[in-house]
Amino acid sequence: MTTTNGKQKNDVLLRVKDLKMYFPITQGIIFQRHIGDIKAVDGLSFEVKRGETLGLVGESGCGKSTTGRAILQLYRPTAGSVQFENTELTSLKGEAMRKMRRNMQMIFQDPYASLNPRMTVGNIIGEPLEVHNIAGGKERRERVKELLEVVGLNPYFINRYPHEFSGGQRQRIGIARALAVQPDFIVCDEPISALDVSIQAQVINLLEKLQEEFNLTYLFIAHDLAVVRHISNRVAVMYLGKIMELTDRDTLYRNPLHPYTQALLSAVPIPDPVAEAEREKRRVILQGDVPSPANPPKGCNFCTRCPARERVMREYGIDCAQIEPKFAEVEPDHWVACHLYTPSRVN
Ligand code: SF4
Image (tube, rainbow, N blue to C red; front, side, top):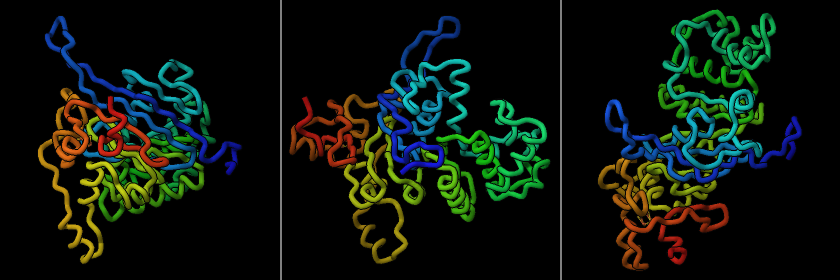
């Protein structure tokens, strides 16, 4: 399928390979010695196709927001490759990077903190138009009014300040700002988690409508599997800086393979009381805490909490705490990092 601007839907828009984002830990005040690293993102590889939504899910602190920022080069990755439309972003600098940023925008989690309280809505949304020399003066004002309408806000709000809006309206302002430069790709970093439940669905519906209208591609970051299910075409499940499982949405929810995904899904409520009671019996309660990203396990990152670890030792003789599983395609378009599915690939 060809889009209005001649670009093919389902082409690979973004290619991430072995992406690492480490934050150094130092000791000493004058001679700061490097004594270790927080491995926030530790070797991610995935692709995002034009026009799709890839959901990135995981518990708080698993590295998903850092992944979004490293893709947009708001953090410069420690290692790995990020290709956007076949351009390597990690080596772009200065003006070339600034031009590329026009194609990639971000919608932030907290609509209260992400908008400058001293700027009018017109200036907040119009700023990127000026920065990228797209429109100024009267043209800029008209464009901002159009954008307000596109996100469902009254264009007469243009001279108001963020504190005059509700949380949902502020998130709409953030979305309008991201749309101002007509990007291809938007990282939605938990865009509804700070909002009241009653307006979360409205913002999701708006994002879906805009995707259809402007052929947008989303990386949708969330900690809630139920939210991601609604909006995503494919879902990647992240744990302690690594992707544990990646496949299309229906397969993931119908047939989760990784023990971590199974545990997460067993905790999502079902709106049918009979099915819910039945599922309650099979609920997987994970023991223990997530290890520190400064000192992750040597083998599988999930080994300290995994209910299947003993089975792998018994059946395959593999010690998950010592040997890291490969992130492998175990079925067509279904990627998993677990020895249960790739025991023969060890060695
Ligand atoms: Fe569990 Fe081992 Fe699979 Fe890791 S590799 S998820 S510890 S069974």
